[in-house]
Image (cartoon, rainbow, N blue to C red):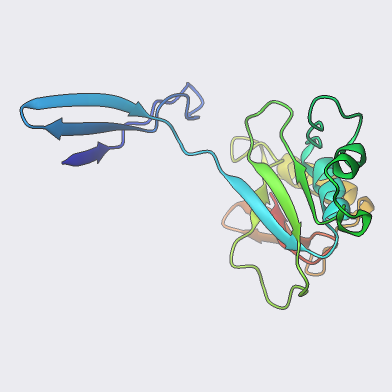
Length: 181
């Protein structure tokens, strides 16, 4: 029998710092307790141009493109050595948090375009949260929106404000929705 009891550890700011749960396994008369860490995730984008999407999100999130395998100066050299036809070199790309904290993003080429609203989206938290005065939060969000528009993002609805929250719903260059708050 296995039971999970969530017991997250947090720092003074309320951020998770340790195991997000304790898993207790009982077998016969023995009980073993082990820490269970949060599962790492990769966020996958279906897209028409993985290289352009990766470039946009690298700049947006201050991420980096992963280094090619050892022995290769760049990804094109690796693809060539693997015998991948040049027309397939833009089938996939990735972007990673340089600190290894945030999720890895993976961009994969698909034949069909985006046709409906995302069922999931990313929120970019740039304002400092509710402990920051709302006028300062607005200025931080608006500055980031201006930066992201210069990178190719669009904003067709303008800022939203509700119950003390302030955000802007945007689209990446291929139309995927995300929010800046």
